[in-house]
Image: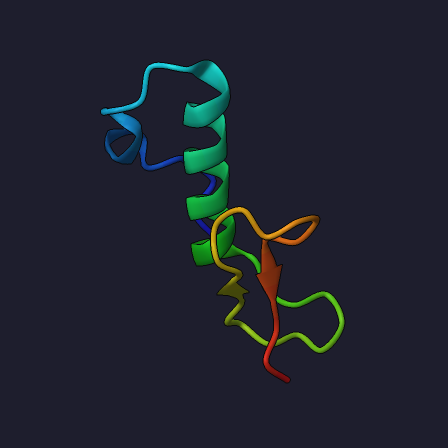
Length: 58
């Protein structure tokens, strides 16, 4: 597990909340596993999906 953010991916954003969203969503996509089944791959819902960011296919 990588505990650092990939800072350069947020370089074009100015808003602190946008930067936080980009950094945390990218980090989760690459470092978190499904808490229900342990699957290493989580998939991102399309942008602006209410309430949800990631899901597991299993």
